[in-house]
Amino acid sequence: MKFSMKRSLRTAALAAMVLTAGCATPPTDPDARAAYDEANDPLEPMNRYFFEVNYAMDQLFFRPIAGMYRTGVPEPVRDAIRNMLRNLRAPLIFIHDLAQGEPHRAGVTLQRFALNSTIGLGGLIDVADELLGLQYHDEDAGQTLAVWGAGESFYLMLPFYGPSNPRDAGGIIIDSFIDPVSILFRIYGPSYGPMARSVLTALDARSRAIDALDEVERTSIDFYATLRSLYRQRRIDEINNGQPSGNQNAPTIMSDGSSPFLEGAPSQARVPSAVTPVAAPMPTVRLAPKDQISQRPQ
Image (cartoon, rainbow, N blue to C red; front, side, top):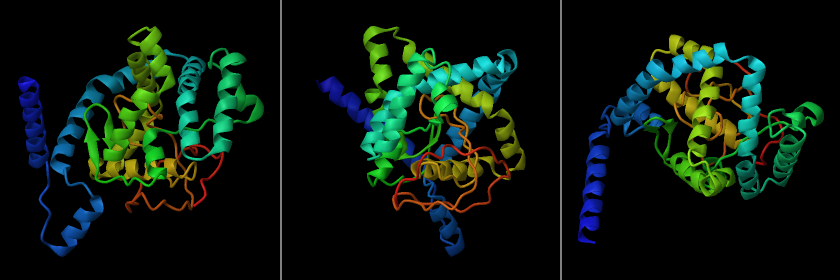
């Protein structure tokens, strides 16, 4: 017991030292302080370090693998894999639809899961969209917490995963415990099922974002700051349920949540009070909207 307590204290002390060392000192100049407060990135030195680590891993390993996947696997097969991954996520999306008070969207998710799991051959074919126009939408615990009034707090760069904040990082942990498919994997196996699903989801997402992210990097003066802004605006888009603001998503090395490279297009969506918008020039990348099923009442 004493050993456990001492180890816990040492872990807490180490975490405090890391956070303290990674904190940026607020500037005294009024204009610089305003920019500092707008960025809301008090851990910027530490975040930039993890960003560089993530970027190096992505460029050395994940991007080349994603490129080989995109080149070597025919597009119809890649689309079928993506459909299957989306279908596996449907039970979790259904939970969050209900938790956010969205019965219509919950009904759409349930219909999609029923149709695609049966007629769609286990989700390989998205018959719900192709035949009935029931479009895919995504939800996660971070969005649910935002709907419940939780603010994003400060910016956080997670090792391996990528851009986040304390609310969304907590949402990742919550989803890992309540995702029905992951629970079934843990109970009935195979034990590597959740990890394999995460890797395949990230691989599919990264392969679809290669060109767009290369363009964002090429046109960015500060790639880190650009992705920080894009990530925040993407989360606003997702919380607003399909009312995007014209941005491309930030890269993520590992994710079993919403596809980290979902597309955006311009709109005039209002921002929930729980989310702080970040005004910054956006790259010219424009793709298709995330979904247009409904807009959450403001």
